[in-house]
Image (cartoon, rainbow, N blue to C red; front, side, top):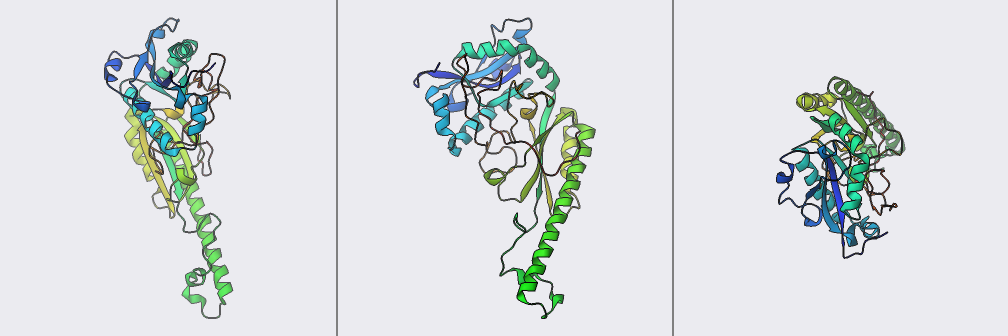
Length: 345
């Protein structure tokens, strides 16, 4: 089942706890493509369902249907504009009430399909919203800033000059080059060891202040920017009352460590924690696991550029992106994993 390109489809930003001032706070708010933002609140069909709402707006099927999204996958300017608008709405909602951010470009054929999703998962949403109440996400990145490139090599013409003066004239240019390469390699190895120590320090801070942790794959290429090699890229769920202590102590994790830079960003809506971290594969009910909330192309902290989204699918309900089963909506975050790791909080 598909929607004609000239018809609107329903774009979903977040599931949120109902709040008496939420609808009023969204009056006049525009989201993706400049469309007005509104709430789907009724008809969830279970006791307590009125406590959970879905934040949506209409968007053109020509851009957000399956074919349209495929066309836009490589258009970073388009993705950035969508990501910025998506994130702005999520932040507006999260400032008023606990919210579960949905994946970028979570789209349904109409309000009826979106309401069916809300109905099918309302209990899970309510439980997760209770868990995330009064908690925020902080991101921590660790960079290795050794002078060499990823291969440990520098230019051959520069290498002899970098050899120590004490090496003397007895060194041929070839030996001077090899000595410089060896020293450069040793410097990088020392920087990686320092990064590991910084990660272990962050883990200590997390154990003291965070309630959950999401391990993300370090960013590369345009996502990382020209700021060194990103070797650690994790998110932490922190109670608001502990946020300042977490931020200060995590930012201090690189102190005294040569060749290492620690970057702390936030606080953000809990993008990385809308789904429990111990959920089994295939139970992604609300969101992807973004490396960054959406934002500016080429930046290294949050906000950041979304990764190329997954191709949206279509299910029997006609949803192009179904947050209830994670089968369709496009992800706006990076892959997860890591190089330098401390223990869990």
